Length: 230
Image (cartoon, rainbow, N blue to C red):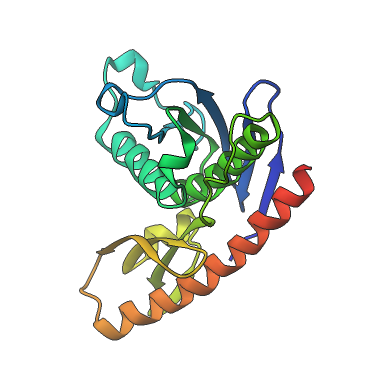
Protein backbone atom coordinates (compact mmCIF):
# COMPACT_ATOMS: atom_id res chain seq x y z
CA UNK A 1 0.00 0.00 0.00
CA UNK A 2 1.11 3.55 -0.67
CA UNK A 3 1.84 5.88 2.22
CA UNK A 4 -1.50 6.85 3.80
CA UNK A 5 -1.90 10.04 5.84
CA UNK A 6 -4.83 11.76 7.56
CA UNK A 7 -4.59 15.47 8.43
CA UNK A 8 -7.59 16.06 10.71
CA UNK A 9 -9.34 19.37 11.48
CA UNK A 10 -7.99 20.64 8.16
CA UNK A 11 -10.61 23.36 7.64
CA UNK A 12 -12.11 25.81 10.13
CA UNK A 13 -15.86 25.63 9.73
CA UNK A 14 -16.82 22.03 8.97
CA UNK A 15 -18.02 19.86 11.86
CA UNK A 16 -15.49 17.25 10.71
CA UNK A 17 -12.62 17.77 8.30
CA UNK A 18 -9.80 15.59 6.96
CA UNK A 19 -7.23 15.83 4.19
CA UNK A 20 -6.52 12.22 3.28
CA UNK A 21 -3.53 11.19 1.17
CA UNK A 22 -3.01 7.84 -0.54
CA UNK A 23 0.42 8.45 -2.02
CA UNK A 24 0.00 11.37 -4.41
CA UNK A 25 -3.81 11.14 -4.35
CA UNK A 26 -5.18 13.81 -2.01
CA UNK A 27 -8.84 14.31 -1.12
CA UNK A 28 -10.35 16.95 1.18
CA UNK A 29 -13.31 15.52 3.11
CA UNK A 30 -15.63 17.89 5.00
CA UNK A 31 -18.63 16.84 7.11
CA UNK A 32 -21.65 19.12 7.53
CA UNK A 33 -24.42 18.55 10.11
CA UNK A 34 -27.91 19.91 9.45
CA UNK A 35 -31.11 19.66 11.49
CA UNK A 36 -33.18 18.37 8.60
CA UNK A 37 -33.67 15.24 6.55
CA UNK A 38 -34.85 14.50 3.02
CA UNK A 39 -38.61 14.88 2.61
CA UNK A 40 -39.14 11.13 2.37
CA UNK A 41 -37.62 10.69 5.85
CA UNK A 42 -39.56 13.47 7.54
CA UNK A 43 -41.31 12.47 10.80
CA UNK A 44 -39.71 9.01 10.77
CA UNK A 45 -37.23 9.76 13.54
CA UNK A 46 -34.36 8.59 11.32
CA UNK A 47 -31.40 10.57 10.10
CA UNK A 48 -29.48 10.46 6.84
CA UNK A 49 -25.86 10.35 5.66
CA UNK A 50 -25.01 11.30 2.11
CA UNK A 51 -21.99 12.45 0.09
CA UNK A 52 -20.94 14.59 -2.83
CA UNK A 53 -17.76 13.92 -4.80
CA UNK A 54 -15.93 16.21 -7.19
CA UNK A 55 -12.55 16.51 -8.88
CA UNK A 56 -11.07 20.00 -8.95
CA UNK A 57 -10.16 21.31 -12.41
CA UNK A 58 -6.41 20.82 -12.06
CA UNK A 59 -6.39 17.67 -9.95
CA UNK A 60 -4.93 15.78 -12.93
CA UNK A 61 -2.11 16.47 -15.40
CA UNK A 62 -4.47 18.43 -17.66
CA UNK A 63 -7.20 20.86 -16.67
CA UNK A 64 -10.83 19.79 -16.89
CA UNK A 65 -13.80 22.15 -16.80
CA UNK A 66 -15.93 22.32 -13.67
CA UNK A 67 -19.07 20.26 -14.00
CA UNK A 68 -21.11 23.19 -12.69
CA UNK A 69 -20.29 25.03 -15.92
CA UNK A 70 -21.66 22.13 -17.94
CA UNK A 71 -25.02 22.40 -16.19
CA UNK A 72 -25.09 18.78 -15.03
CA UNK A 73 -23.17 16.30 -12.93
CA UNK A 74 -21.38 13.61 -14.91
CA UNK A 75 -22.26 9.94 -14.60
CA UNK A 76 -18.93 9.01 -12.99
CA UNK A 77 -19.25 11.79 -10.40
CA UNK A 78 -22.80 10.79 -9.55
CA UNK A 79 -21.89 7.11 -9.26
CA UNK A 80 -18.93 7.79 -6.94
CA UNK A 81 -21.02 10.15 -4.77
CA UNK A 82 -23.58 7.39 -4.30
CA UNK A 83 -20.86 4.86 -3.52
CA UNK A 84 -19.43 7.05 -0.76
CA UNK A 85 -22.87 7.65 0.73
CA UNK A 86 -23.76 3.94 0.72
CA UNK A 87 -20.44 3.07 2.30
CA UNK A 88 -20.82 5.56 5.14
CA UNK A 89 -24.42 4.59 5.89
CA UNK A 90 -23.22 1.02 6.44
CA UNK A 91 -21.29 2.27 9.47
CA UNK A 92 -24.03 4.33 11.14
CA UNK A 93 -27.28 3.56 12.98
CA UNK A 94 -29.53 6.13 11.28
CA UNK A 95 -32.24 5.88 13.93
CA UNK A 96 -29.79 7.03 16.60
CA UNK A 97 -28.99 10.13 14.58
CA UNK A 98 -32.46 11.53 15.03
CA UNK A 99 -33.86 13.69 12.25
CA UNK A 100 -30.53 15.13 11.14
CA UNK A 101 -28.48 14.91 7.98
CA UNK A 102 -24.74 14.62 7.59
CA UNK A 103 -23.27 15.48 4.21
CA UNK A 104 -19.71 14.53 3.34
CA UNK A 105 -18.12 16.66 0.62
CA UNK A 106 -15.16 14.87 -0.96
CA UNK A 107 -13.11 17.12 -3.22
CA UNK A 108 -10.16 15.61 -5.06
CA UNK A 109 -7.37 18.18 -5.10
CA UNK A 110 -4.78 15.83 -6.61
CA UNK A 111 -5.45 12.54 -8.40
CA UNK A 112 -3.05 9.64 -8.90
CA UNK A 113 -5.43 6.68 -8.83
CA UNK A 114 -7.85 5.45 -6.16
CA UNK A 115 -9.75 8.69 -5.63
CA UNK A 116 -13.01 6.93 -4.75
CA UNK A 117 -11.40 4.59 -2.23
CA UNK A 118 -9.46 7.45 -0.64
CA UNK A 119 -12.72 9.43 -0.46
CA UNK A 120 -14.57 6.66 1.38
CA UNK A 121 -11.71 6.12 3.83
CA UNK A 122 -11.17 9.80 4.55
CA UNK A 123 -14.87 10.65 4.69
CA UNK A 124 -15.39 8.08 7.44
CA UNK A 125 -12.82 9.89 9.61
CA UNK A 126 -14.51 13.25 8.96
CA UNK A 127 -17.87 11.65 9.80
CA UNK A 128 -16.52 10.16 13.03
CA UNK A 129 -15.12 13.54 14.11
CA UNK A 130 -18.46 15.24 13.43
CA UNK A 131 -20.37 12.60 15.41
CA UNK A 132 -17.96 12.91 18.31
CA UNK A 133 -18.51 16.68 18.40
CA UNK A 134 -22.26 16.11 18.36
CA UNK A 135 -21.97 13.82 21.38
CA UNK A 136 -19.75 16.28 23.22
CA UNK A 137 -22.20 19.13 22.61
CA UNK A 138 -25.16 17.02 23.78
CA UNK A 139 -26.84 16.75 20.37
CA UNK A 140 -26.54 12.98 20.54
CA UNK A 141 -27.47 10.92 23.58
CA UNK A 142 -26.38 7.52 22.26
CA UNK A 143 -23.51 6.54 19.97
CA UNK A 144 -24.74 6.13 16.36
CA UNK A 145 -21.43 4.86 14.96
CA UNK A 146 -21.42 1.09 14.55
CA UNK A 147 -17.90 0.53 13.27
CA UNK A 148 -15.35 1.95 10.84
CA UNK A 149 -15.61 1.49 7.10
CA UNK A 150 -12.74 1.83 4.63
CA UNK A 151 -12.02 1.18 0.97
CA UNK A 152 -9.04 0.18 -1.14
CA UNK A 153 -8.31 -0.69 -4.74
CA UNK A 154 -6.87 -4.05 -5.75
CA UNK A 155 -5.89 -5.30 -9.17
CA UNK A 156 -3.95 -7.75 -11.24
CA UNK A 157 -0.94 -6.00 -12.75
CA UNK A 158 1.54 -7.93 -14.88
CA UNK A 159 -0.04 -11.15 -13.66
CA UNK A 160 0.35 -10.32 -9.95
CA UNK A 161 -2.17 -9.11 -7.37
CA UNK A 162 -1.40 -5.49 -6.46
CA UNK A 163 -2.84 -3.36 -3.64
CA UNK A 164 -3.80 0.33 -3.77
CA UNK A 165 -3.05 1.00 -7.43
CA UNK A 166 -1.70 4.35 -8.53
CA UNK A 167 -2.60 5.78 -11.94
CA UNK A 168 0.17 4.04 -13.88
CA UNK A 169 -0.62 0.67 -12.30
CA UNK A 170 -4.31 1.18 -12.96
CA UNK A 171 -3.60 1.88 -16.62
CA UNK A 172 -1.69 -1.40 -16.94
CA UNK A 173 -4.05 -3.49 -14.83
CA UNK A 174 -5.60 -6.60 -16.30
CA UNK A 175 -8.25 -6.49 -13.59
CA UNK A 176 -9.35 -3.52 -11.47
CA UNK A 177 -11.34 -4.02 -8.27
CA UNK A 178 -12.57 -1.53 -5.67
CA UNK A 179 -13.38 -3.00 -2.27
CA UNK A 180 -15.36 -1.41 0.58
CA UNK A 181 -15.49 -3.25 3.90
CA UNK A 182 -16.41 -2.67 7.53
CA UNK A 183 -13.88 -3.19 10.30
CA UNK A 184 -15.31 -6.63 11.14
CA UNK A 185 -14.81 -7.81 7.56
CA UNK A 186 -18.33 -7.24 6.25
CA UNK A 187 -18.52 -6.51 2.53
CA UNK A 188 -20.23 -3.25 1.59
CA UNK A 189 -19.28 -3.04 -2.06
CA UNK A 190 -17.19 -5.02 -4.54
CA UNK A 191 -16.63 -3.38 -7.93
CA UNK A 192 -14.50 -5.63 -10.12
CA UNK A 193 -13.87 -5.31 -13.85
CA UNK A 194 -11.73 -7.34 -16.22
CA UNK A 195 -9.90 -4.81 -18.37
CA UNK A 196 -7.98 -7.13 -20.74
CA UNK A 197 -8.99 -10.70 -20.02
CA UNK A 198 -11.46 -12.43 -17.65
CA UNK A 199 -10.22 -13.14 -14.15
CA UNK A 200 -10.71 -16.46 -12.41
CA UNK A 201 -12.49 -17.29 -9.17
CA UNK A 202 -9.09 -18.02 -7.62
CA UNK A 203 -7.79 -14.59 -8.64
CA UNK A 204 -10.90 -12.96 -7.20
CA UNK A 205 -10.34 -14.75 -3.88
CA UNK A 206 -6.72 -13.59 -3.80
CA UNK A 207 -7.73 -10.00 -4.52
CA UNK A 208 -10.35 -10.10 -1.76
CA UNK A 209 -7.82 -11.50 0.71
CA UNK A 210 -5.20 -8.89 -0.15
CA UNK A 211 -7.82 -6.13 -0.05
CA UNK A 212 -9.07 -7.30 3.34
CA UNK A 213 -5.57 -7.07 4.79
CA UNK A 214 -5.23 -3.60 3.30
CA UNK A 215 -8.49 -2.46 4.85
CA UNK A 216 -7.45 -3.79 8.25
CA UNK A 217 -4.37 -1.57 7.99
CA UNK A 218 -6.49 1.40 6.94
CA UNK A 219 -8.86 0.95 9.90
CA UNK A 220 -5.88 1.06 12.28
CA UNK A 221 -4.74 4.30 10.65
CA UNK A 222 -8.26 5.74 10.88
CA UNK A 223 -8.36 5.04 14.62
CA UNK A 224 -4.94 6.62 15.10
CA UNK A 225 -6.14 9.71 13.22
CA UNK A 226 -9.17 10.01 15.49
CA UNK A 227 -7.00 9.76 18.58
CA UNK A 228 -4.68 12.45 17.23
CA UNK A 229 -7.65 14.70 16.38
CA UNK A 230 -8.42 15.10 20.10
